[in-house]
Image (tube, rainbow, N blue to C red):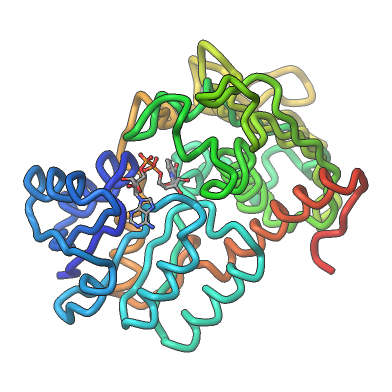
Length: 345
Ligand SMILES: NC(=O)c1ccc[n+]([C@@H]2O[C@H](COP(=O)([O-])OP(=O)(O)OC[C@H]3O[C@@H](n4cnc5c(N)ncnc54)[C@H](O)[C@@H]3O)[C@@H](O)[C@H]2O)c1
């Protein structure tokens, strides 16, 4: 039985991490810490377990085996490294960290301590993505030539546990990036996962078009990100992330191959639709993707528990996800410098 501590008790901890640990027969949640002590106490009284006055106190408890890091982006690296050094396995939320050096420090400390470090890239567990990956490997649409992938919704200000224009998601010091960190990392990571290829070259534009803070000024992080990715296997395409898709979420990926087109979460009626070169069609009905308003089991927590207890490798291992972060940081550099950036050099 894995005994879990929750570090930061906001929305994702409450709707995903805590309930999913509690419904897993091999894990239980025993400890909570949040900068907002009242929030930690409220969560502990709802789900059961003890509140700690500091992260150090929680990490010093030898009865805790592993922690989930669910804090604002800027704290992921510091908290993860502290937890690994204290001998805990770590499941850290995305984005892994806000600087590439921090990602490297995190994987370095995980290797040094021999503790597991997994990153919560839940799109890798969405059923249509798992099936699509296998179909692509089986050659269902031939060689994938191009793609377009997008993740957008109306913004995080209605999602956060402290909603409104003052949300930390809009604060450059705490979030570092906007739609790119919040949503772009998901699709960047997904494309690597689906295609089994790395992003090798990026041309990106990031912009703040519409979101305003409490002072009515445009926020200091991007609310839209548009990237052209060139992949190691020769495939190329676009990845867009947006906080200004008002009215409905778009979480779709379309892959254009030599034998046909695969649409994933693009047709509201079917999770995957394949249109072959001769015009024939195959429809697969798996499940609706999770949205902010429809939280189904992510699979991430079960994966973490199972990987830690069995010692097997995981598709969420930080050593792999760090390669997605390379692409994200290359995109930021490309946007800042107004040029195409090589990712892997
Ligand atoms: N995998 C996903 O799909 C997904 C979805 C949503 C959020 N997230 C990630 O989860 C993280 C948290 O997001 P959220 O939606 O829960 O935000 P939130 O605003 O709802 O909650 C954040 C919580 O973290 C606490 N906190 C912030 N810094 C802290 C620190 N240093 N120590 C302790 N507590 C701290 C705050 O007090 C608050 O309770 C973010 O990094 C976000 O990117 C991932």
